[in-house]
Amino acid sequence: MEAELQSLVQQAEAGQDSISTWPELADFKAGFVGPNGSLTAASKGIAKLPNEEKPVFGKKINEVKQRLEKVFESIRERIEATELADKLGPAVDPTLPVTDTEQGTEHPLTQVRDRIVGIFRKIGFTVVEGPELETEFFCFDALNTPASHPARDMQDTYFLPDDFKLKGEKRREDESFILRPHTSAVQIRTMTKRKPPVRILSPGRCFRRDTVDATHSANFHQVEGLYVDSDVTIRDLKALLDHFVRELFGSDAKTRFRPSFFPFTEPSFEMDVQTSKLRKLSGKWIEIMGCGMVDPNVFGHVGYDPDEVSGYAFGMGIERIAMILHGIDDIRHFYQNDLRFLQQFTGD
Ligand code: PHE
Image: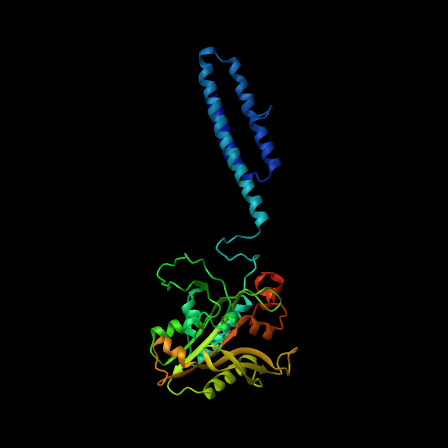
């Protein structure tokens, strides 16, 4: 009897490899534990045994049943694994990159910023960054724009409450912390720390109290430049900017300087560019930046001697340059994160 039970286990173990589908498994199981199965039949024999042998035999039957269950379970796992592998297709390498997620690209403003910065870096400008949260001193006073000066309106911005404190930054009693309206503040910070010659570029985010419309945003980006040395002239400034626009817009691009006013430059100009390369704007003069010769009063604020040094400065909005280059008609597109817009800038 015992040998018979033992042989059931051997039969199951020997036969399991030939089972590869669910119906086959069902038949296989039925052959042992179904109503007409061999184990079922063997266990009926218990009735004929003397009472004292019944518990031992019952235990044996249970052991065999458990061993058979193990065989059935391993067949089940194998069938499931095969089914899953069929669904997944050929061998899966989980270390490969996923194929169905889209790859992001640099934001068009980042691309244009890098292009602008790249042109100036090639000719010796160093990039310097500064804080977005500034004091009035760095944004206005040191730039020859005292509190009473009407030119502050041009760059009106957001003021923090009087009791606002910033670790590591000091402010005078009579000035406030503000969100910087231009990156010219970085130029002051740099000049207070370094001796001339200074040749820097300061890209970064700026803020102004502007009502948002197609061409204004309260939050925008600038690149400003500064060069201070002995004997820097307007001619140097013009030559630099001519080179810049030809690199950015194409070799036929021309510049035009119109007189303007900024408190920190004297004389000051608005610079226009004309090029045939831009479809809609072809042949038109387009204003792209403010510039001028650094006002001697600014040098006074940073401890430079205006009799010894001279310099030029310029500043432009990255959004504006990007809009001109790509023919974009509304500044708000840059901040809406609409993929239909962003996906048009997948390679520059
Ligand atoms: N800071 C000026 C602005 O934000 C731009 C500028 C920079 C003009 C340097 C002249 C010289 O409008």
